[in-house]
Length: 575
Ligand SMILES: Cc1cc2nc3c(=O)[nH]c(=O)nc-3n(C[C@H](O)[C@H](O)[C@H](O)COP(=O)(O)OP(=O)(O)OC[C@H]3O[C@@H](n4cnc5c(N)ncnc54)[C@H](O)[C@@H]3O)c2cc1C
Figure 1 (cartoon, rainbow, N blue to C red):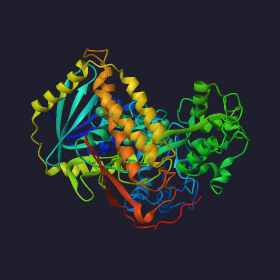
Figure 2 (figure 1 turned 90 degrees about the horizontal axis):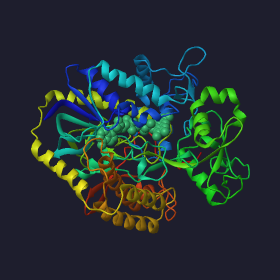
Figure 3 (figure 1 turned 120 degrees about the horizontal axis):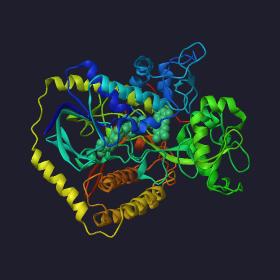
Figure 4 (figure 1 turned 45 degrees about the vertical axis):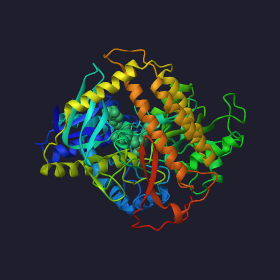
């Protein structure tokens, strides 16, 4: 059996930042990072626009409490304010620390780190590296893994969390290269497995964002928090769904409907294109519904609106958002210097996740904690984003809470021994699971069920939700789940069998999808990204609380947990 003091599943920003912190705190600890991709290919690498911190380089009026207030207001008052306070207070230091590690942030002419405007932020506080911020940060962090001697298991798929007696003891993992199965035990296990964008049919997320960590946690019997809050990013490039960063609007681009109107004046007159994402996405969806969308031939009534950069001029476009220009040019043949880009909302981010406290320790219930189990980054819910995340707060969360969780783990493992794990039992069960997939005489291809599932989630649990729609969605999902044992794998081999991984990922997607639907159905109000046409108002009396959804094959049990309100009393949210 493989053994380490600490196993971190996930090589994105959160996992790498935690690993570096553990190694810095106690260089004697033996740390492993496991990832189903190469760490550099984690979705973090695709982050474009930047990372928020009140450095005050551009705007001397900024402060950590202004950042905290914007975040809480953006969250529609569902964020836990103690966690937000930590996020906003620690932000400037973690940015400087990244700079010291070698991250090349874009600069002002006097050499200090530049900062741009972002949706829902009242000051220019987003630090960036052109529109390739995630790339710049992740490369330095991965280099640092090597420097600190962290062992990296790349292209190993973790298929199970070993949890018994309320204690995480290790993981079971499958090597893509040759199908080898290994049990890895440790004094602490951390999940930093990212989001679940692939639950929906149009997303800005990479193909690996399948919510595996969420599903493994749920299957192990632990709750998932606030899963109904799914972020649509307003500007996915039509028709591919690839992200056009909010940085483009931060730098001054307009949203235009078929009548040539900057329609945001009707939805968020004070913030216009820089309103938070939930409001901007709904505005675009309303415009399209009302027949003011645009068709590819330029006529009205179509499925997208325009993002217009032309007035910004070539020099600004090419220096501030060159990657977004390139994406539109390469993927849909639009030259944004002379033509507007076609955009519509795309699934982007998961506000909910594995519930954790501010040290990254996973909650077993509203007030209990699991021994030896930690989580950070997009897969976790601490909850700094509540019902709606502000742009550039997620990279920040990964780094602030990755670091804090790393520090907490380094302390935690000092007093612990390696747990006893029945290796043979877990290997046999994993082999049986894989063998069953290889042998089942099915009639469906994986992609058929996956597509039907993604369409189901998109149609029945999208921007606008109603009880009737979601009940239909749950029913359809149940039928699809019954078809899962009838999927057929063409590849029966063990060398690079990507079909096995796709089949396991499909199981994760379905568990996550079911949790989203059940959580959304129970929340009979509209808050942040969760918009119910049958309950169109926010209802603080009954729903100012976090959902805790417990999965079991028989169904999902919904409970709730209070919100930490320490600084700002909930108010009506207007922009
Ligand atoms: C296109 C795009 C642009 C964005 N831009 C910004 C931005 O400008 N600012 C901002 O703040 N946020 C942005 N975000 C959001 C932000 O990038 C992410 O929330 C954040 O990077 C997530 O990091 P993470 O470490 O939690 O997970 P990820 O970076 O997604 O990493 C997940 C890791 O887990 C591993 N993994 C998953 N499942 C398994 C398994 N079963 N077995 C083994 N390994 C597994 C993966 O291989 C990967 O290494 C953007 C997101 C997207 C999609």
